[in-house]
Image: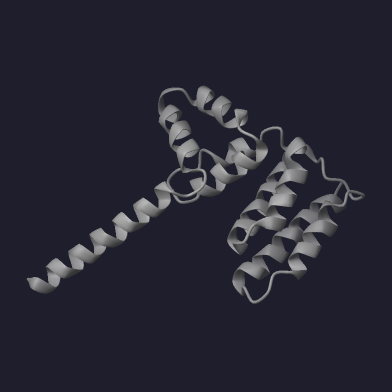
Length: 159
């Protein structure tokens, strides 16, 4: 009985600390405001998201990944994607977490799938490859980063 109580307490403590950590993460306030509107007025939620700066949109989209049952924010980041490409590439460059870099390359793939706006002569791929050279020892995420850059590069070949 005592053992079960300790386990339940540890589970509670872990979930509480994660909850408190998530509340203080960048993008959490904006996400919560947008999330509140999603069920009652999805268009207003989308409008609120698009009113943020591109950098803030990226932060909110990365924060939203903490909620696997909420894939609604990520498509907003693809809206007006052509104008966001350079900011996304810059954000990939400065992000510390490799999994965020991987996620954002996936956003570029989705944007380019919609608009075919990254052309062969742009410096997007070369910048992503340079960023890839700075990624060390991240194992699967590193491989996934390079795989996604290759997918984006392959999209350009089919133009």
